[in-house]
Amino acid sequence: MTYPDDYQVNIEEWPVNEKGFHVVPDEIMERFYKQLPTGTINESGTYRAFNGGKLYQIGSTPEKDGDICSKGGKVWQATLHQRRTMAEDLRDLLARPASDTVRTAAGIEQGSNQAAILAAALREAGKGNVRAMEYIRDTIGEAPVKQAEITAQVTEGDKELLRKVQQRLGIE
Image (cartoon, rainbow, N blue to C red):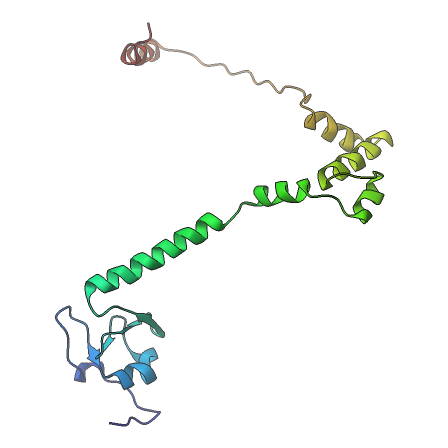
Protein backbone atom coordinates (compact mmCIF):
# COMPACT_ATOMS: atom_id res chain seq x y z
CA MET A 1 0.00 0.00 0.00
CA THR A 2 1.23 3.51 -0.79
CA TYR A 3 0.78 6.19 1.86
CA PRO A 4 0.40 9.90 1.04
CA ASP A 5 2.96 12.34 2.48
CA ASP A 6 0.38 13.87 4.83
CA TYR A 7 -0.62 10.45 6.23
CA GLN A 8 -1.22 10.51 10.00
CA VAL A 9 -0.19 7.25 11.63
CA ASN A 10 -2.80 5.82 13.96
CA ILE A 11 -0.66 3.47 15.97
CA GLU A 12 -3.71 1.65 17.37
CA GLU A 13 -4.47 0.11 13.96
CA TRP A 14 -1.21 -1.91 14.00
CA PRO A 15 -0.67 -5.17 15.92
CA VAL A 16 1.25 -5.45 19.19
CA ASN A 17 4.08 -7.98 19.63
CA GLU A 18 4.71 -10.20 22.67
CA LYS A 19 6.69 -7.41 24.39
CA GLY A 20 3.84 -4.94 23.99
CA PHE A 21 5.35 -2.87 21.16
CA HIS A 22 3.41 -1.94 18.04
CA VAL A 23 4.66 -3.47 14.79
CA VAL A 24 4.26 -1.35 11.66
CA PRO A 25 5.10 -2.07 8.02
CA ASP A 26 8.64 -1.19 6.93
CA GLU A 27 7.34 1.60 4.66
CA ILE A 28 5.54 3.28 7.59
CA MET A 29 8.69 3.04 9.71
CA GLU A 30 10.89 4.51 6.96
CA ARG A 31 8.61 7.42 6.07
CA PHE A 32 6.81 8.30 9.30
CA TYR A 33 9.14 7.23 12.13
CA LYS A 34 9.01 10.74 13.65
CA GLN A 35 5.30 10.23 14.38
CA LEU A 36 5.76 6.84 16.02
CA PRO A 37 5.96 6.37 19.79
CA THR A 38 9.14 5.03 21.35
CA GLY A 39 9.38 1.25 21.06
CA THR A 40 7.44 0.88 17.81
CA ILE A 41 9.29 -1.59 15.57
CA ASN A 42 9.09 -2.41 11.88
CA GLU A 43 7.86 -5.74 10.53
CA SER A 44 11.33 -6.94 9.56
CA GLY A 45 12.50 -6.29 13.15
CA THR A 46 15.51 -4.18 12.19
CA TYR A 47 14.51 -0.76 13.54
CA ARG A 48 12.82 0.68 16.60
CA ALA A 49 11.42 4.22 16.85
CA PHE A 50 13.11 6.06 19.68
CA ASN A 51 12.33 9.41 21.36
CA GLY A 52 10.10 10.75 18.60
CA GLY A 53 12.33 11.12 15.61
CA LYS A 54 15.23 8.73 15.90
CA LEU A 55 15.69 5.24 14.57
CA TYR A 56 17.51 2.66 16.61
CA GLN A 57 18.88 -0.38 14.78
CA ILE A 58 18.07 -3.60 16.53
CA GLY A 59 18.96 -7.23 16.06
CA SER A 60 16.45 -9.81 14.93
CA THR A 61 16.47 -11.39 18.38
CA PRO A 62 16.98 -10.03 21.91
CA GLU A 63 20.39 -11.76 21.94
CA LYS A 64 21.47 -9.94 18.78
CA ASP A 65 20.08 -6.72 20.21
CA GLY A 66 22.24 -7.30 23.29
CA ASP A 67 25.25 -8.00 21.06
CA ILE A 68 24.72 -4.71 19.21
CA CYS A 69 24.50 -2.83 22.51
CA SER A 70 27.56 -4.63 23.84
CA LYS A 71 29.62 -3.75 20.76
CA GLY A 72 28.52 -0.13 21.02
CA GLY A 73 29.52 -0.07 24.67
CA LYS A 74 32.96 -1.47 23.86
CA VAL A 75 33.51 1.15 21.16
CA TRP A 76 32.46 3.88 23.60
CA GLN A 77 34.87 2.57 26.25
CA ALA A 78 37.69 2.53 23.69
CA THR A 79 36.87 6.14 22.81
CA LEU A 80 36.97 7.14 26.47
CA HIS A 81 40.37 5.48 26.88
CA GLN A 82 41.71 7.44 23.89
CA ARG A 83 40.65 10.76 25.38
CA ARG A 84 43.38 12.65 27.10
CA THR A 85 43.26 15.19 29.83
CA MET A 86 44.31 18.76 29.25
CA ALA A 87 47.23 18.16 31.61
CA GLU A 88 48.50 15.29 29.44
CA ASP A 89 48.23 17.39 26.29
CA LEU A 90 49.93 20.33 27.97
CA ARG A 91 52.83 18.17 29.15
CA ASP A 92 53.32 16.94 25.57
CA LEU A 93 53.20 20.49 24.18
CA LEU A 94 55.66 21.74 26.79
CA ALA A 95 58.09 18.92 25.93
CA ARG A 96 58.09 19.72 22.20
CA PRO A 97 60.94 21.76 20.75
CA ALA A 98 60.11 25.46 20.74
CA SER A 99 59.63 27.18 17.39
CA ASP A 100 62.13 29.77 16.17
CA THR A 101 59.69 32.56 17.05
CA VAL A 102 59.16 31.31 20.60
CA ARG A 103 62.89 30.75 21.17
CA THR A 104 63.71 34.23 19.87
CA ALA A 105 61.05 35.82 22.10
CA ALA A 106 62.35 33.90 25.12
CA GLY A 107 65.97 34.70 24.31
CA ILE A 108 67.20 31.10 24.05
CA GLU A 109 68.99 29.39 21.18
CA GLN A 110 67.51 25.93 21.63
CA GLY A 111 65.13 24.09 23.93
CA SER A 112 61.57 23.04 24.53
CA ASN A 113 58.48 25.16 24.96
CA GLN A 114 58.84 24.61 28.69
CA ALA A 115 62.40 25.98 28.63
CA ALA A 116 61.20 29.00 26.68
CA ILE A 117 58.46 29.71 29.23
CA LEU A 118 60.88 29.41 32.11
CA ALA A 119 63.41 31.67 30.36
CA ALA A 120 60.70 34.29 29.79
CA ALA A 121 59.66 34.09 33.46
CA LEU A 122 63.29 34.45 34.54
CA ARG A 123 63.74 37.47 32.29
CA GLU A 124 60.57 39.08 33.74
CA ALA A 125 61.74 38.34 37.28
CA GLY A 126 65.04 40.03 36.47
CA LYS A 127 63.09 43.14 35.45
CA GLY A 128 61.47 43.22 38.89
CA ASN A 129 58.17 41.49 38.16
CA VAL A 130 57.17 40.15 41.58
CA ARG A 131 54.62 37.68 40.16
CA ALA A 132 57.36 36.16 37.97
CA MET A 133 59.62 35.92 41.02
CA GLU A 134 56.89 34.14 42.99
CA TYR A 135 56.25 31.78 40.06
CA ILE A 136 59.92 30.81 39.92
CA ARG A 137 60.14 30.41 43.71
CA ASP A 138 57.02 28.22 43.78
CA THR A 139 58.17 26.17 40.78
CA ILE A 140 61.47 25.23 42.41
CA GLY A 141 59.63 24.20 45.56
CA GLU A 142 60.51 27.05 47.89
CA ALA A 143 57.02 28.39 48.40
CA PRO A 144 56.39 29.50 51.96
CA VAL A 145 54.61 26.90 54.03
CA LYS A 146 51.10 27.88 54.92
CA GLN A 147 50.19 26.73 58.37
CA ALA A 148 46.80 26.60 59.95
CA GLU A 149 46.09 26.12 63.59
CA ILE A 150 43.20 23.90 64.49
CA THR A 151 41.76 23.85 67.95
CA ALA A 152 39.14 21.46 69.18
CA GLN A 153 37.80 20.16 72.43
CA VAL A 154 38.11 16.42 72.76
CA THR A 155 35.45 14.77 74.88
CA GLU A 156 35.61 11.48 76.75
CA GLY A 157 33.31 10.04 74.07
CA ASP A 158 35.81 11.06 71.38
CA LYS A 159 38.65 9.44 73.31
CA GLU A 160 36.63 6.24 73.73
CA LEU A 161 35.86 6.17 70.01
CA LEU A 162 39.56 6.58 69.18
CA ARG A 163 40.43 3.74 71.58
CA LYS A 164 37.90 1.48 69.84
CA VAL A 165 39.24 2.37 66.40
CA GLN A 166 42.82 1.74 67.54
CA GLN A 167 41.78 -1.57 69.07
CA ARG A 168 39.99 -2.62 65.85
CA LEU A 169 43.06 -1.68 63.78
CA GLY A 170 45.39 -3.45 66.19
CA ILE A 171 47.13 -0.24 67.25
CA GLU A 172 47.74 0.09 70.98
